[in-house]
Length: 498
Image (cartoon, rainbow, N blue to C red; front, side):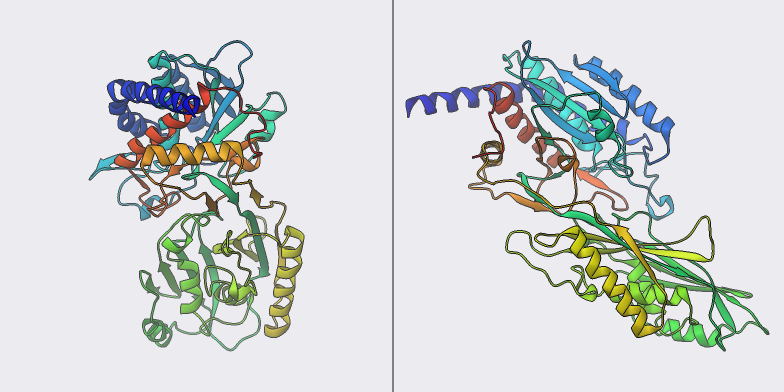
């Protein structure tokens, strides 16, 4: 007993020493550093922004006395331990999801600090955790406490898009012995739902109809993992003098869901029907969004000429009945995992064939159904829809991802839970299940640990994305507790086993 008490007291003293260094040297740096890194528009395809952020990361790491290595799609920032020490990894991503700048109240890559928040694309997902990790490592370095581990921060570059960075990295680099992925919820995530998607494609050329207008365009959503906040259908008058009045009157009578808006505007032979909603992270905060695509599908029900566009919107309307996939015949429920999360995400014309358009629906799947079983089920749903409606939708999608789970009795899980409880004063914290897929699925021996507190809706992927300064500071202190516990203690043998 006295040995356990001594070890606990020693750990507490070390944590206090590192936190004091953080308060003295780093706490005031957090907000300025985050505002700097938010300014890099690291969306998919902007290689110059990625390289500029890499240069910023190298400069910042060296200023903090940390080692930096450019490992291609991943950057390494390291606080070395003794020779041949085990490696404790921390992992974040430096890329961000796309933005619709017109929907933001301020330029999304010009960070705003106001009313206790840092706002800007990436402030929460995942540049906030990047800065928190850098400063926690610096505080540990400055404390002078002897480390038994090397601490290595890995910064990925395409987590929100192609997900090639980890695979490429592992072709020439060994993974850390165990890694904390700082891109999800506290206290520790013991289950991540599968990331799957259903696509349905249609020929949008109009079928024979007596209506004097056709669908000339349709568009919705930015990315599969974002609740769409904008959607639109464009109609074009095809014979005689345009008379949009009766249709506009019908549309103006539509009762829209709360926090959504319908805009209708006519200009000569063109009528634009658009909806506005609220974006949100499709895996972590689906309920916090207001789906503009589903709202549009409901608003135009029965008002479009027969054809592929009307069929796609009818399918979107069916799929978007609720957040858990009931409209797709999914009623699975589990006491630990909860239910599916289903986001009717995007509708886009084919770049190579403008006569075709595709609706994409993001499906976060729980056990025990496999990806192959879900694929078979959803293809049947599409086939049944076609038979019932006369549509000719073609089903596709992605079903290769599977749920990932950890034993909540595992050594590392219990250490992280205990540390989180000590750092926050929460007694017996419970591990989390997340709908968001993280690097933990791709990097061996890794698990998601924060940096978002469970008492607030997650703002990542949202318009006007923001992160509370108080939570940034609080989360850094939780991370410091975990770093000191693991990086100054003995190697954890079989960390995910009891």
